[in-house]
Length: 284
Image (tube, rainbow, N blue to C red; front, side):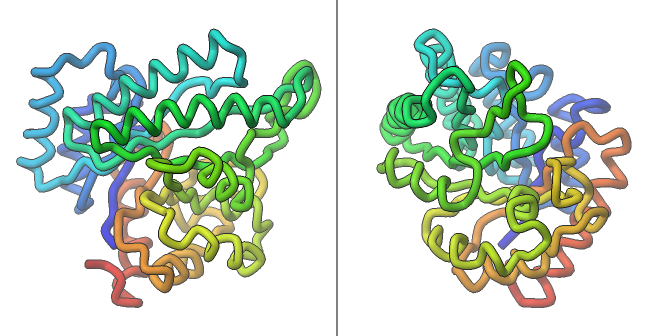
């Protein structure tokens, strides 16, 4: 395993180009581009600029691991879905141009006015189209589950995500098939495990061979706070050990959304995660 950082950690203070430099200085092996303005919004970065980003990362000794998708995930209505599919195809093309390995996606939410089975069906249909396009250009998609949280409401009613835990993540990947894999968010696992990581072990093991990306952040076990690892309740040693036993050998991506003090936060994060990896001989 190696360690990457999402450029979103730096987005309040630094440009994408500066984020590449800061990630290298902090000792990271790779950077994940946050697919939102002013960082990696594909519609405002032309081919020449994409090539410059790829070269810049290489000059700083960084791989570009992942394009982390951002936007309002579709609930399945036709216009929403068409716009969402188009946006993700643009991100797949962007990933190819900058040399990224894959694109990470969150497949939408249910609505209180629609049957859950219908939003699931529409989400699967849309992601099949995205995955098929990615397969044509050699870029896989990695689905991330979004846990149910207290603030997810529409019209005063709960609005759970379509893919909300490890079981539904596996089902969604199986339903989409083909070029569709998993992005495991350890912080999200901490929420669904409610502080007991062994309770999700079997569900994690069911994803063996499907995981191509990992996000790493901390929280209180209730809400997705994107804290620096070690500042919340997540047992990172447990999850990284298990990933290692499962044969996962790609990047663990530190995800710190819009840090006020990104440089010390990035250094603190990599130290904790790298120490865990080194201790079990997983950092390679």
